Length: 92
Image (tube, rainbow, N blue to C red; front, side, top):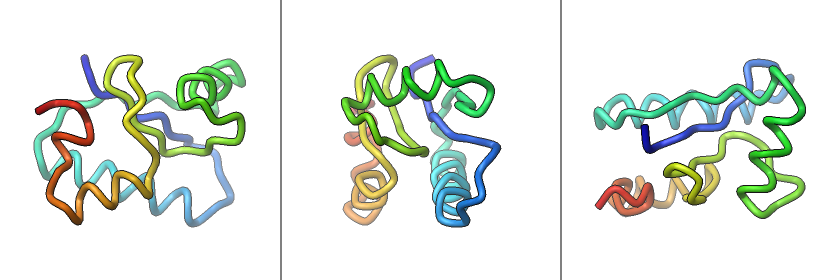
């Protein structure tokens, strides 16, 4: 599978929860298949996400096409506004 969405099921942040839900809703609405990777199950997944993103402070949601970094929520939201989600996710 190509698209990977790093997210967390354990967060006190309403912002993170709403951003994750919006990304999932949009991907589903566009019938884009993706794999959910829950970083709350182990610190190594969080570290992997941050390493791949090139940002030691990265927080979910983070999007990748295989191991190629696509971006974070803000970048995804800009792609939605520009109607360029497929290009953002490196699908086009």
